[in-house]
Amino acid sequence: MGQETIRQVLKQEASRTQPDYVVYIPRHYDGSENDSLNEHFLVFDGPDGSLMAVWVQSPLRNSRCNRIMFSRSADEGITWDAPSRVVGPMHPGDEPMASWAFPMVSSSGRIYVLYSRNTVLPGGYWVQMHCGSMEGVYSDNNGKSWSSPQPIPMPTSPYDDPQGIVPPEWVVWQKPMKDLSGGYIVGYTHMCNPTVSTFRPSDQKGWTWSDSVVEFMRFTNIDADPEPCDIDIEYSGWGEDALRVPHYLYPHLSTAQEPSFVRLPDKSLFCVMRSCTGYIWWSGSKDDGRTWSNPQPLLDRDHGSPMLNSVTTDPIYQLSDGRYVLLYFNANCLRGDGSEAFPRAPLYVSVGVYHPDACQPLWFEPPMLFADTDGYHIDGQRGEPGVGGADLSVYGSFTSRNGVDVLWYPDRKSILLGRRLAF
Image 1 (cartoon, rainbow, N blue to C red):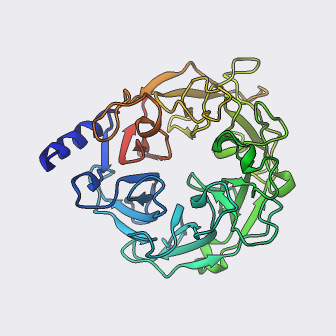
Image 2 (image 1 turned 180 degrees about the vertical axis):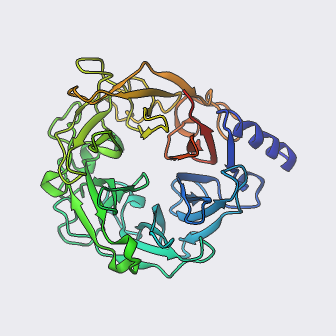
């Protein structure tokens, strides 16, 4: 396939999900860059009034070469600067991987980017690129340059390797939210090390059976502009208090993952998470995330129907008009063979409305089809719909600026796009 044909195919595929903004189209396919994978796309408000973004980039899926990239838009997402590397290898072996970065901005305008620094290990984990110590960098010039990486201590968890050889296996997948005290709070998936897990790897039928819980961390001194190694972190829903969701076949096994939460009008927090039960689960906090209710299935309303989803993303965001929007796949995924991660297309949305006196404070309207790949891969070839390279995992983010609500998403974990949410 010639370069001009490749560009035409990529342009065609970039428009397939009907985006309003095109942030980045990889050049891997014409041989000029090693950048085919782009995901974990977090767009945030820059301290200079611009839009900024960090994401994970790699030459290929599972290439063990994750790095963190940065870009900036001065015109509300219409055009974006050429991306620059923040940290991580450009080629395998350059340095340990850097994965799952998330940004925070201090009141003075310092931009922090924290991430998992992955190390190469002989084994003893579920997914290598989820293992790592926490590190951080910062920029005082709007992302033009970054400080040297510094380690950030993490407490030893009962879910981690008791010998301390294998690093924690954890992933922050959404942007931290401002808490009521002026700090930041975020949830994360914590995989249980196989040596302390309910299941051993040999018991699995697939990675969707990995023992996992949801925990939370709060960054309390970001506005003091500390060095990354001096960032104060408070943990909640941690250890024995972590949020757990029973596996649909083995209820003693927990598969609580990828928390996403919003603030409700009464200042409480409403958190949804993916599971291996065939539907979404939720938990609430009345004290700004310090304690959480026992997770329960997410219904469309009190005593209603469960919100169906495979073991994949189900982010929730608050729209500028005060309503909420949930993105998910609205499909039964339970086959008992370890393939519960699919389907991951088509993508649906449901609008949520606050009901202050209800047991479940958000009630959801019927699902609406939002986007589909029609089974096409980025290279223009058709495969099985909703599987592998034809999927629409929404490892993205959301911004609301001047009344414009935008979902920023990595289409098929490759092309970075944005689409306005108007319902």
